[in-house]
Length: 127
Image (cartoon, rainbow, N blue to C red; front, top):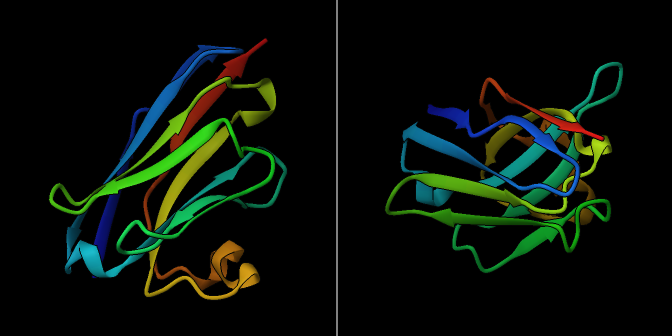
């Protein structure tokens, strides 16, 4: 079992920045690939970014590429999502998730393929 706890969400003006953190406990964090997803009201949960266990492979949704940065510190059992140039359409509940490995394009973007989830943290971007 892996327990995940997100933090760092909040209210920010458009153009601003936030840094989300996801702290893991339980089984060895470093063996898991990690992902960030988000879900806006009335919409499906969507992929934001993913990082392999070593940090050597990183993937982003087109909508956040160039603005968001995913990283991890295995010594601290933590994965981060640095969000810059935020837009109102980035408003959502952000979730971190863990899975055994990142495989295909569709596999790493599919929420159902992730084994563990945090409770989510709200990000609101005002215009």
